[in-house]
Length: 303
Image 1 (cartoon, rainbow, N blue to C red):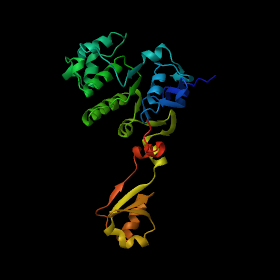
Image 2 (tube, rainbow, N blue to C red):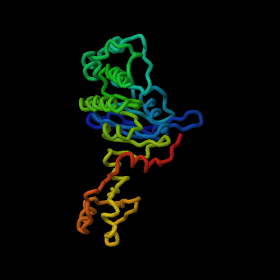
Image 3 (cartoon, rainbow, N blue to C red):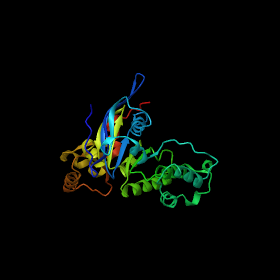
Image 4 (cartoon, helix red, strand yellow):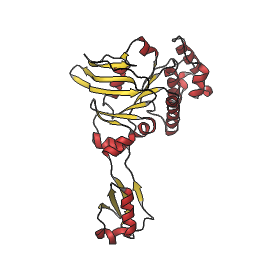
């Protein structure tokens, strides 16, 4: 029997223990465990087919787990879990003949203590499109509507499954700002994404999933400093070539440039200046979450 964790309101809102999901002879999720703190955004980051959506659907109680345990506020999921969670699915079909206002009113009637429509309309910027039919909405407008639907029952825990997939950069950034505002209100968010930028912008903690298992977990900064410590400095070959022999640095020549690898960027810059190297055309690149992702999962595309 899996022990039930003690619940502390300032600690874990959601706990997943040894989650496993098998379809026939195929393992989709293998021994996944993690905990989500109250008021934070927890991201499941991974390539397509990694098991992110399956993990979410099991946690949401949409499909059953093969084995493992899931606890909400220290207890097994029950009616309270369903009443206090909101879900924005990756793909949702809406009734085309309804307007945005009618859709919100329809969903509002499903709950005993729903959020005020004006609050949702303002938060998700739906006022300009309230009378638009669902089949006339752009991708960004539809995603904002579905986010409003996910919030209509005033949830403590919100699930977002790749919320900005397919959106243009402006719509994507606007949606991120809404999600960030929701988190700042004390809501807890669990989301899936394959966007490094989205994960780095929104998530307090990230679990990188590959082939059904968590292979790394931590804040974006922790993951970067743990797995990709090396910075690079790129300089014109003409600015540094006469001093390369005296500089004890790891470097490679790349066309007309020299790329220097450094674990301590400040010390490397001091050495370059001490050697009289001109830094006027210097370019410094620091690792990001994409570098971590490629380091851990490999660069080969897996279908």
